Amino acid sequence: MASSARKRPRQEPEDNRAECPFKIDVVNPEDKESKRKSKKRKTENGEDEDATAKVNLQMSPFAPCGKFKKHETMDLYYKVSPPKKWTDMTRYNSFVLNGVKYFSEGFIYVANDSSIERQKAANDNKPMQIRKKSDDDWVARILEIRASDEHHVYARIYWMYWPDELPASTLDGKKFVQGRQPYHGMNELIASNHMDIINVVSVTSQAVVRQWFEENDEEIQNALYWRQAFDVRSYELSSVDLVCRCNTPANPDRKLLGCTVEACKKWMHEECIIEDALQSTYKRLGTDKPHLPPEPIKKAESDIEGQRPLSPSETGAAVSAQHSIDVKAEGEPAQNGNGNVDVKQTEEEDGPTAPEDAAPSSGRRSTSAAAGTSTSSTKLILKSASGRKGGKPKKKGEANGESSRPWEGLFEVTLNTEKNGPPVLEFKDLREGIVGGEKMWTEPVRCLLCATTVV
Image: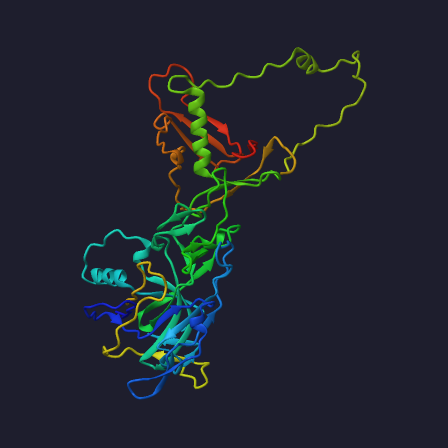
């Protein structure tokens, strides 16, 4: 079992924690205190050491598609304490732990208390409790690797957040939120500039994390991904694309239908399409009216007359007609800092108590081991993946404090996109005692924004 890097001081000793004597402080570049000349002080060994750590700039490795309101970028000014002990260590491009080589700029899994307890329970054959994604190992991106020897190897990292871990008062657009939001997918992470330093013996394995650009969801079905970022300085989430008539983000685990009318080109949530169908059906039928199939359109007498074959004596009979037309739709430690270092875990050593977390407190991070032309119809674009989960439709009227949905239990609607041809809405009348009419029927899908029929 791997050890953990303790990031907050604790009164009781914990054997499963890998001590880390360093801490990160976020610095405001406009703060005059950070620009003063470094003063000298005497250490316990009588050596001079900078009383003020050097302020460094970390350029963000993350470039979210969305924007922040307060800061244009996620670039961060920071300093490490104790500074001399950090800078005296050799910088490496990689380290080797348990036969696995880890590189700077790579993603890693880092053990925490929850993952350690789960590992212990599995080893003891204890029943596993239902858990959230945030109970799994944490995910981080390595920024820098430094070591004094093979027993003391440390990584400066940026944490990736599980959506469940978003702290209270997080600003998401115009509202404050906490934790997972309806648009977050099961395998979704949130990039951040929450910086930390960890002892690498708490690393459990390599991680594969991709950035998701929302126009292409085929890349994120079976992998961890991120599209949004969290700025620890302002507790702000970067913006995400808004879709559908409800003007909310898309959840990649749910289906979207796309309108290709040039004036529209909007994506629609499957649940919003169904909700609109239920609402309009209830408005039309209520609780007691049967659904009657539309009457066939009667043809005019002139149309019927025009269908008779012309006799040779009739006008136009001598004119030859064209044939019918088919209609188609459109290794070893390096001395110069460019090598890698093998990591070996020693017996527990008495180390200094770890300092407080550098980033704003969020209950995180004690690491542990282990408009165009108008048309009558439009084509359908379907974005979905096998095995993806659907979502419960958002209740209309919630914003006004209403919770009543009078159509619930009266009708059932499903969106069928599997059959050849255009997608259809399949209705089922669940009402009892309705005389006459149809109990099951289908209707075409109409775009929620431009009202054209989806074909």
